[in-house]
Image (cartoon, rainbow, N blue to C red):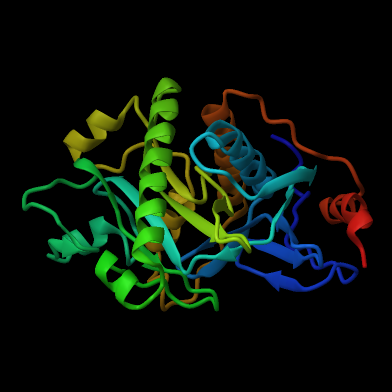
Length: 318
């Protein structure tokens, strides 16, 4: 295992302008309609930060890079350059206020997941009606989109239907038609490529934004272990038969650990032990290698990850 003391818990760089600090990414808006997006090693779930996972930010940035490169024919994306292994320089977009979640299986652990809602007895959700008798983690007849409001202020994402999205003027009907078609095409590409590597892309979320001309771009990240749930195809059928959780390498590992020990939305999160942190770091690295087919090379340049990021972003200082 690589050096677990090298973590990027934040990227607060006062020389960069117009900061915005999210749950995982620290961002800066440049004056020329470009945005700096720095992936920290923070891990977020249940609307809060759970821990800092070594090399997670590099894994996310490089996994998204792989998928951006392999889906640019479906939808243009925000990427302009990669000045650092944790950093993207992207087009500054107006992010559409709807998170597009595509689900291929009855799965999930969060309050808005279709499995959670289904187990509560709901059959109508997000404008879809699911049949009775589905089993945990069963494949759906066809992938569905379960959009949520995008909580920019750190609040809860709320389930939406297409009718609500249009009625609330969150998106126009034309924008919805475009992003939903793109999302299903991206998901199909992701499932197809994942299957060739022995993986199941279970569900994922996409964020889209518009430029000043109103053109739609894919933003944020794509098909990473943070934005997506992957299962290992080998072992899925046995888990489905036994009613157990399919083998995976996404952040459900740490989500599940927390959820079995407390109410993660209301209780204090118990301290996550070092061995769980190390196991999660290895899970992210293994995910990168399984998804991309490439060996993970940790970026250990610089005295610390923050020093390295600062040095690589010095040309953008005010």
